[in-house]
Image (cartoon, rainbow, N blue to C red; front, top):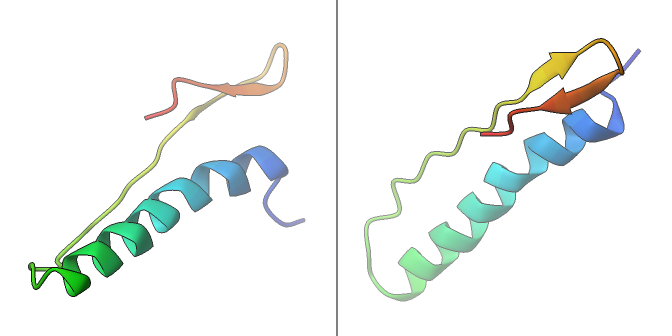
Length: 53
């Protein structure tokens, strides 16, 4: 079983922000050393994700 839609949603945000930031840095001659991280906690009742960081 692969990742669930909420997990994909969380994973895409730092990736998207990183690409946008790297392109901005490249166009403006800035240092493109960029890192991103996203986290969330799983809750069982009801099944959902919370505390997005």
